[in-house]
Image (cartoon, rainbow, N blue to C red):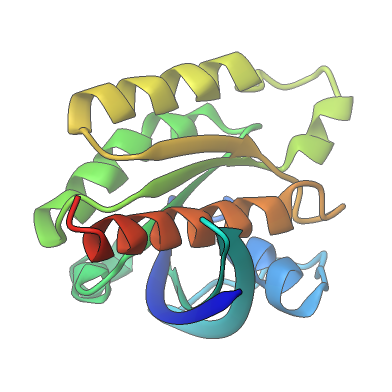
Length: 191
């Protein structure tokens, strides 16, 4: 089986406090911290993911940029968008304002980069055990992903995760690697 290595810059975007850092920490180090630590500017992580596509083993060397969601860093954030091959846009299923901000984040991203694949992540599903909050449903997340895909003409996948329990975290990042590999394969084949 042939093997290919791809280097890919992946950015995590979304409002402050949605769990971007917790997601990447769970994925890279398999750890979760209860206390909130604000990201200042950006943090950088790296992890290699191996997938199979068309009878080829593809190693995607993911350089993951965790961007601060705070308004104070908006002017700096856009400089980190450049050169990204994929994005993960995260919202908190227990905070509707973070869900409503998703189109804003994606519009800002697409002003700086070509049309890149996107994984839309509804994080903190472990909080749904409480009925006190107005949670964003999985159906709402799927519908938003569908609308974004149709409107923007980019690949958009949707998944719900819990950085706390680890549910679907690895799957979300593997989806990103798969999208990157699929696009690289299409370019290689001249499609």
